[in-house]
Structures are given as C-alpha cells and as structure tokens.
Image (tube, rainbow, N blue to C red):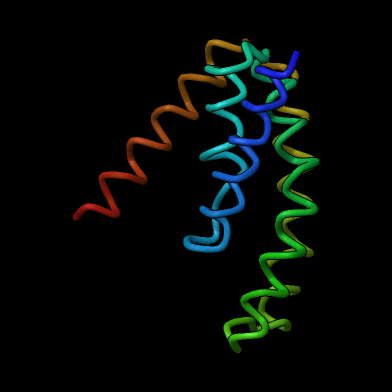
Amino acid sequence: MPSRLVRIAGIATAAGAFSGLFGVGGGTVIVPLLLLWLAYEERMATGTSLAAIVVIALFAAVAQGVYGNVDVLKGVMIGVPAVIGVIAGASLQQRLSTAVVSGVFAVFLVASAAFLIV
C-alpha cells in the first residue's frame, strides 16, 4: 500500500507542477499516469482526474493571480459555457468503448505535442 500512496503523491506533484507551469495537469498528466502506474480503467481515471482538477485549478488560479496573470471575466466567459461541453463529453464517453476513448485521447495528445513543437 505505501507504494501506491507514493505513486499517487508523485502523480499529484507532477500534475501540480504542470498546472502551475503550463495550465494543464489533469488530462495530460493525471489520466495517463493513473492508467499506467495504477492500472485504473479509463473512465475511473478520467473521473478521478476531474475531481482532482477542482482543487488544482483553484490553487493554480490563485497562484497565477498573485502574479497578475488571470483575467477573471474571460475565465468565467470560457468556464460557464464549457459546462455544456463537460455534460456532452461525459455522456458521450459513457457511450463509447474504452478503446475508442483512449485512441481519441492519444491522437489529441500527439496532435497537441506536434502543434507545440511547430
């Protein structure tokens, strides 16, 4: 059991660092590591990541706000309509096979990486 807790702490630390540095951490760090290190099922990893993001995002936004890097109005303008996307995405995820969800996620990560490199 301690090994599992150490892995969870490592995942949490990496997610926090990535959130503070790049504004990402849940989907790009937590989900893959829960899948690879702790053998979570895709849907459980996604749900667990989303729960963690609530805490991570709050502290990351406050930390960035201290440096003057937060436009609260734009954040709300993006966040409120995103709720519709969350509801649609969660519903769609339940209808797709885990293999399809994993494949689409992998393509998204590779495309994002390629875009950032270029």
